[in-house]
Image (cartoon, rainbow, N blue to C red; front, side, top):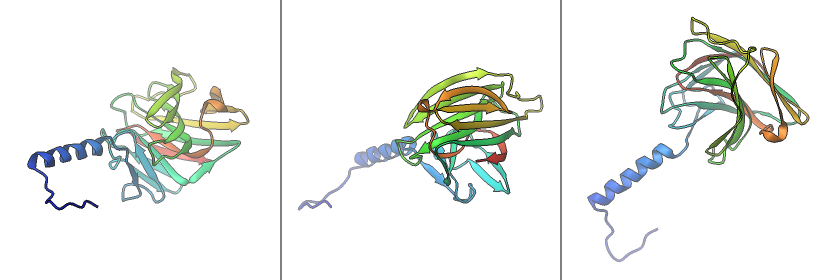
Length: 218
């Protein structure tokens, strides 16, 4: 509380400065959108930038349908607090890109998540994209470090002429190994110590994509 014997006031210039600062904070402060009409019950999305409010997730039976907005909604990491795993476990899902992407962008599995609603968020992810490539990375706060850079692999079905692409992705934690597979074929293997393996798991989908996820096993 401010206490003063004198009147306190802001000039027009002060007001403009405060408004400018507020706008800057609004742009750069990470935000979380929870089930507020756009997301299925129990789900939240963390956008890389912006609010993520234009990203949509519907769940019907075992089918998850993601309709992603464009920047500034940007890429979204979707999670449900009831989806957690530790120790040996396998997370598998089939992804179908329903419409041709406007430019190379990706989608796949998120795992080992923690503090997704805070600045010190952490998780790992395993993605594919249209040209038949995969990518593995760690996120720590605002930093992303590639564990495996974008790499082509014949096991990955590329985007077809009709714009569709379907691939089944799997992350298997087995002892000190994490095995990454696409369509039943191992494409990479890493030490568990090189990744985040225990915690929340979910999905990561790039902006402007229309993606359906089925055959989820967890």
